[in-house]
Every structure is written in C-alpha cells, then in structure tokens.
Amino acid sequence: MKVVLSIKPEFAFKIFDGTKKFEFRKSIFKDNRVKYIIVYASSPVQQVIGEFEIESIHNYDIDTLWQMTQEHSGISEEFYYQYFADKVEGFAIEIKKTRKYRKPKCLKADFNLFPPQSFAYWSDK
Image (cartoon, rainbow, N blue to C red; front, side, top):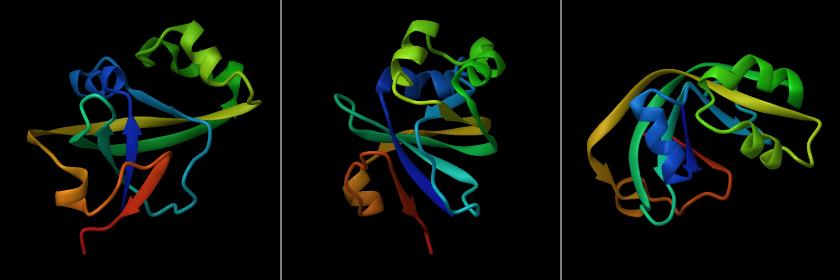
C-alpha cells in the first residue's frame, strides 16, 4: 500500500537529490502496511514527481527528533521548530530508496485523487 503526501516543491526535490532523508509530519497514517510514499509536489509545481520507500518512521519528542535527524533533515533548525511549534512530539519518515519519475504525473489523471491536505491512501490494485 502507498500513501500520497503533499510536499512543498523545495523539499520534494531535495528528497530526490538526496539532501533530505527525512520527511517530517505532525501526524501520521495509521495503516502500518504502507511501505511507499508517492510525492506530490504542491503549488506551484502541482505534479507527482516520484516515490520513495520507507525505511522507518520515528516518533519522538520534538528535541529528540531534531537531534536524530538534523544532519539529513534538508531544512533549517528554525523552520523545523516553527513547523512543530504547537506540538510536543512529531514524526520523521526515514527515506530508504527513491524513484523519481522521468516524466511527472498528474494527480487527478493518473491517480484519480485531489491534492491531500495531509495524506491520502492509494492502491494500484
């Protein structure tokens, strides 16, 4: 099973160039069968640019999570703490293996989905 995540383009592209090895979330999907993330680069790109395999999902208090992930976070410490400002704990999806599409895909035409606020489950079956 896969999940579609809306990710800001500046961060989405960092995932595929290898400089961002963690995707941070305030909440996470409940289905533990999810093994892959489909990356929807949000506005202004508005395209599905690739997918990645999940290595693991870390759930810790904000300070511990930053200490564990900062070297490969792909974001600044200031941005990180602003993002989690109202949270005690957070999630970091560790990226195992990426696959950038040669040609970006359309979320509606290719996946029959609208851009998710947080995430959307998707199965190609």
